[in-house]
Length: 333
Image 1 (cartoon, rainbow, N blue to C red):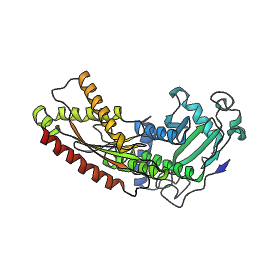
Image 2: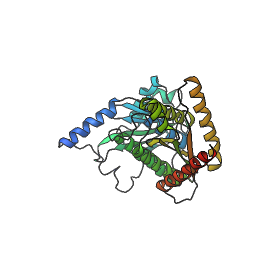
Image 3: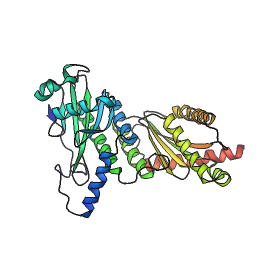
Image 4: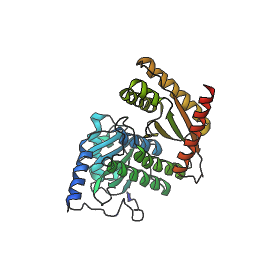
């Protein structure tokens, strides 16, 4: 068992203890955080725990909130969440940055049913989550059946994921989601994708950024009305969520523009993803016919290991490529 070294002072660890509510701003903030706690499971947090589960190759990942509740889980059925949260609390009652290679060395946890019986939990790592004032929001916890430890790079990656979890918790009150499509809006996408590209850079993994534009949204609005235009936007958003992986970052930048940051892939594979999206759109339209058809243009830019390009540069390049395709489509029509 060992404590994870804390990184230099950042918004994550300016303070390590809860601070009293002193003014009206903090009262409003406390109310907003109560909304985070009481809103139940959300896809935005579930994507994060699925990403942590995949990157660290563990069977269970949790975001636990104060009061022994789970905001998100991956690898655990809904009916068994509470027993996993309890195990995390017994291993790490002080909510410290803690790695435990074998939880059987922790007296309070050694006799826990999840340790003694199935699934035979052995490894634990937990990182506290704070807001920018230093108030603790909860914990990011990973559990494994294997006895293992973490190297320096993995600890750095874990800190990145914890930072992302913190920003997601805080962002719940910062209007980072598009209300119509229930995707991240521009602010939310930039925040999530910035962390995703940081993970790719750290692990030297390739990625692709897809920039989508609905070709005929203005015509749908003009001919069929804005309610049908909203229906088209939601339909395309549903197609994106169906087509791309749980751990990919999907957003609506505004109007008829959508983006996806797809980790662990390359430009050569992008064409297959776009063809799958076309098939998904066609399948949705066949099951729920509308007086219009969805058509979209796409720009794709790859991120390769070692690249120093920024997310903003990728967006600009993908946007230009999308408009080139749109012009080509008009020329062929």
